[in-house]
Length: 244
Image (cartoon, rainbow, N blue to C red; front, side):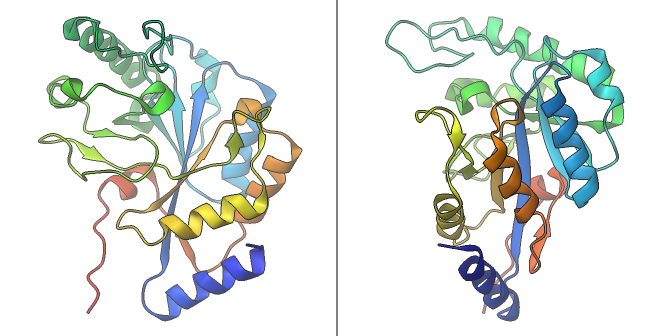
């Protein structure tokens, strides 16, 4: 798929009264790298809302001074440390860890971000590696978490009482192929696939590993017409329109 075909599909959806709703999440914010400054500046220049998933324990104070009005801070775990047992997929929240320990860690990260990010903090947990044990979900609202964001099609809009789930769907980084940009055709094809879903289409980026092609793609993506970019608050309160 190319840009022309993608834009034609977006225009058809708008004409049919089903305009595309996008949202953007960028993960692993911590150190104030040139790439972090670039992703924040790109949001400001393009006027596209950015949901910045920040690692609480690793976040440098200067990070929060860089934020502009279109940036919302989400909680990216607490320390982004892999605690999985040998042979398990990476996760900060392994099944073998006492749930009280995981909750205490999340609560600590929550408090740090609420202190440093202030009004820009939105109480959504984005678990590192997009993995979180299910028994944690029912406990999150009690410590102030109101949403969770992973990757791929969600199985439920409310995986636990008082907890909203809104995922991302297109990760533009090919992690198993040298962390390069996945390519224009693959990115746009994946987007078309998920446009058929009932939740806003989520774009996932990782500023620290972007190559030149990834940055070029984002700049082009953010010029699209026939699209409405949602803030994190809008995405997590989104209700799919009824179609007759």
